[in-house]
Amino acid sequence: MKQFKYDEIGYWSEIKLHIIREYASAYSKILAAQSAIKCHIYIDAFAGAGKHVSKRTGEFVAGSPLNALLVRPPFSEIHLVDLHGGKAEELRILVGARKDVLFTSKMPTRCCWIKYSHGAVTKASAAGFAFSIRTP
Image (cartoon, rainbow, N blue to C red; front, side, top):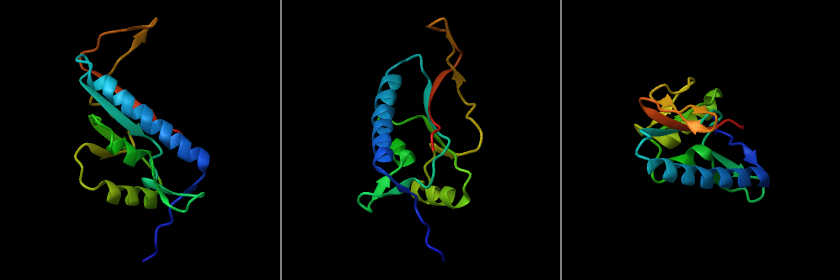
């Protein structure tokens, strides 16, 4: 069996992952405290294998999907997408059987999106927000 080769990432990618981790944590805390918001979803459209290898140290670095799984309060759902079969399989192994994690190629439709109109939030029947990561 061939060993999976994780992507190597540079210093700037490590910084980006740190920023996303901090932002996702703050985002989740703020939205979870809002009674009008029924759910908040994390979407990672380029989820990858879930972890990388640091070019600087040679050690594993948690990717954005693993960081999202550690956010407290947790996201209502976590949607992970990667079209590379090997990366997607590695990610499924790392995530395990969590019921709040969905591997999908479609955007989630369980929650209505809050719409903005001239800077004001309009009402929705089942308000929801999504935190989306799209940069590879």
